[in-house]
Image (cartoon, rainbow, N blue to C red; front, side, top):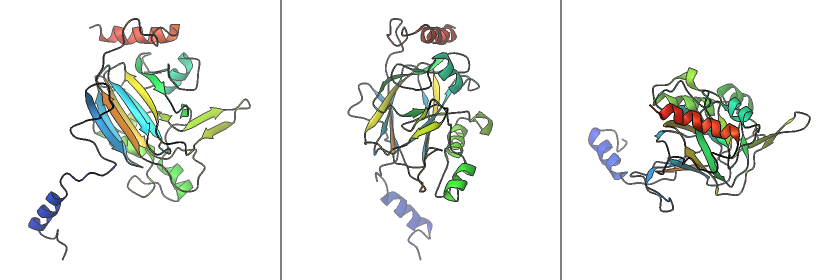
Length: 268
């Protein structure tokens, strides 16, 4: 018989696992020796994993591609009114640029600045292709169900969104960080999949009270026949909200307007 076949054996086994650390799990209490402020979230997201957190306005969120093959698909919601969420089309259109990087912002469907990108050592991101799904994974890998060997980003998003009372209809188009897509002059879609050097990172600042949902699954245009992705680390720490003279805020008229829209929302 298994040692967990009776309640006493199961209890002893469970307690023997206490304080065991594996790479992919939250750090509780949240700590990070290299974070410049009080840490509120530290978690390593496994290949095929997901995470969902409420993030306070002003919080910095650092995402690190630990081993060079992570794909951080990201959804954002206004935590106070989740019907307001990231709008990838407006993020591209309002900034006259389809390529994310330091100095860019992520806009909501209400024209508000939700997050800004403070620094970026990756340079390969995607605002065009959205999340993988079960059907796409099944065509490529032979199977794509949520709890199978080839999970997809859309189903992982649904698990994360459900933790905040949100459902399938709330899973909107995402951005993909660390996996890039460029559009050629003739309109061809050119994926930049890697794998890349380990340790690339993106630091974002929350400009609103947010719900952030992350999925770490292979990019939908990954050309490799095998399902391949590596761990992603998320670290968040407290900091101040954007100051009126912030250089990023004043970088373009469109960016300034988006920040003013956000400030107007909180002037209640």
